[in-house]
Image (cartoon, rainbow over all chains, first blue to last red; front, side, top):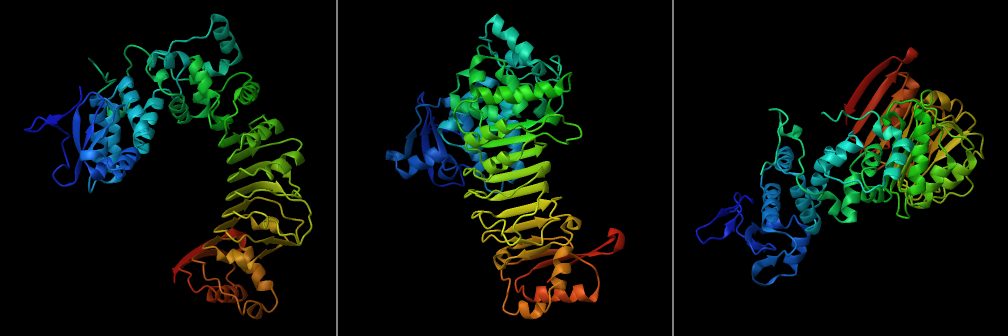
Length: 176
Length: 329
């Protein structure tokens, strides 16, 4: 489940960089979990930034399309990218580590959140992570890896294989 | 729940993606699927599109189409399959815009597929912004006329072998910022015509291995040009390249040997340049023969560039021996 800590008041707190940033706001997930985040980190999301400018009452921003687990992940990402003194290289390493631990369903959730919250960098990185599993792979491999069920009829399937035989050539072996 | 299967103890980037349960990916909104597929090469994206109907639909919306012959799998009838692949893609693409359209059909000694006019026409009709044509083509004039009236174009690269390039009478490229030309044969045209005056947005221009042999004067002017490169001076033969005063609004120039050579041949150059200053020029990269006349010409030119900060000089000797010097000013 979502990586999170609780402070003495029982509120969820995402670790790191909290002390330094005095200005904070609360993000509320679809399942009612509340997360504290610095304004500078939250501002990396264009959507949240716009909501901050609209000045939501009490500094609590409800995000009805993002569940708590996903929001925690997104906040971890935002905190790293808002961290003072984190070099681009640090961030790149963090992103790779951060995404490599996620299975596809989680990646989809994070992509949806990245898209909804308009965090281009995160969305882009998730897309990249997903397609890395598709590069130079056979059609069967892609179907198996992503649990895609073919909805072509047997005739269509046969026709595709015949007409576009090249798509079955020169790919990594499926045993890879 | 196990999330990760490590293939080995090596680094995380080799961790394999694992999906459990149902196909979550295909339930994402269409525009996200399009974006995901856009991160793949066109050939890999096509492979994914054969996996199900939703991916096939996504394929038809793909905004970036790069057909690179060298990336296509080696197989019997490769050229034929590749040609059919492009035809098929174009036939199935929906109405949505194509931002990038590239045909990498080179080198022509190896690739048997020629650029088809219909493919380029397809890109133009889909408001292409970046068009790259690298290869061979048959029946050229319509092609050139169409391309040079493509209002959506921002970047254009024409590396077309032995394309006899008649400069179109009407040019409508209001958005073109970057133009690269290679291997073109430019036949005789009205020599006082300023080829690039009809490119109002042009910022970068480069020409390599183009044959200007029939030109008396090649005029280049464009008020927004910031980068200009021209290569292979041999082919310039008797051509004089006239750079308009506006061109020196540019901050970076690389030229072949010809610039100084021809400037040094201009009669009474100091008087001609008397009232000229090239205030914007910051970097100048020139080739010259280390003879007094050329050095004097260069010094005169530099004296007109008060803000020049880097001057690179390649001293060209016989047999293309190079002595390279670089000076900060």
